[in-house]
Length: 582
Ligand SMILES: [Zn+2]
Image (cartoon, rainbow, N blue to C red; front, side, top):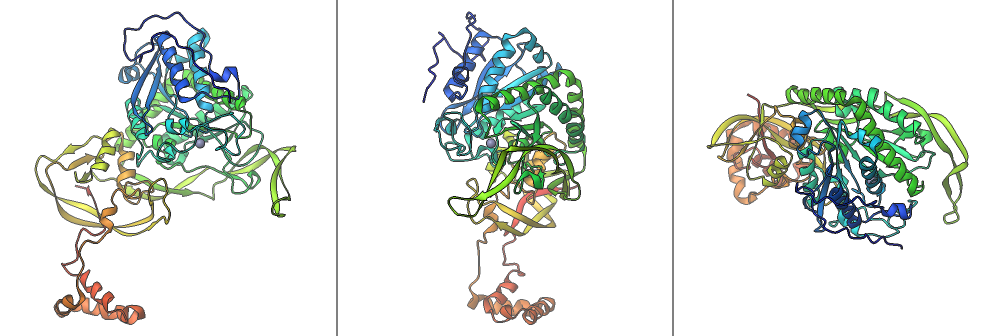
């Protein structure tokens, strides 16, 4: 495989420092321009941005800590005003666009497209106008470990590039499931970049899997019902239609991402991007998110060009609508701070079906030469345009009243770390204090039988709310729910939310009972409890009558009494995050 060896350009240093040497402008070519079926390596990409930053004072490149593989994660900022302070830029009304590349390092169109776009934005006077109102924050190469694990085969169904990285990172994690649990150093660096810049718009560049159809570019917009009314309506009725039209005008007509059960003819569904995914995470902070997914079977050069076109289209949209974007986000953030109820889980609303004109290929079947059974193929000689169903609506299945504050024990330091990384404002108690609070008992949950992203994820979590006095210690954390990060706080701390810290195993220790009883010793005590509590005795007899197995199980009957006695530990399955409601 041909490797592009970058030529050295004298001194290269992080442009975060201000005393730049002025270097004569050199036309920097990227590997893709030498061979349009070639993608830049991590080192080539970083080298390119360092050279660019060296030449253009409008570019800053900064390291944000190491990735799991030991190489640093960078953010590159394009700021026409040469100001790189997010607060100052926001005060000036700039719209922050954040672009993430190679989270799946086998899907690298964004790496090359963003390099081309960066150079064009700097070089061409006419393009520079696109940076009048926008500041672009680029992660040039997010999954570095995956990128260094380079080969030609891991994207079995993908048409180029010749070599590409691997989906898993250095710890074999899919980083696009890691935004809440943050098991990777990559995700820590991402969180730092995201929370520093708090982008208005976020793009995460990918390549699709699945069906075949005519489009090169497919689009996952963050799920609009989950995003919330204010931003969701804006996204669906104003922003997305304009982006679709602009892309069509550039001859890169898009389709919503083709998430089909069998073939697109049966209709397609919108993806529920829970907070574990990049766009779902961004939605927690009222960031408008788009996941461009170029079609795997189209040539790499077209995938790069359409990714470029989409990013350019978003910049054009920002140029025309900067004030509107700022105003609508400001409104959404204010609502998040002040509203009382929050949806925490969703399901597809199959009653509400949209439809749109889809350009596909006829799905046909022929006998497989391997199994003899029917195999699917898409007939390129039979293209079609027809209306297909689009299940694009979700409805809430769980809603909570937010408490005035949550209280988290300092013992759960891994949870506290994540809250801190995400800019959650917390105060530590100055002395031990007893509060009347609401607590949850975990009544039921299901746990996956095989590991998922390094965890045994809990699902279908059922809780029972209890009221009690509880003493917290000096140093425990009080978290008020009047923050712009309310959705992050609530969707991670309410245990029955699908991407809660509880679901991701951060509180598994409470699920294990620590003390038990010896039946032969407890028996006499149990008799005493039954004598003292006729209601308990009655309940026990009733259960014996109704449940034959229970009636035959001596231990189960003693355990029934034990769990209703003061000997049973109150902390078992008691979710330890308190809700302060008054
Ligand atoms: Zn992907």
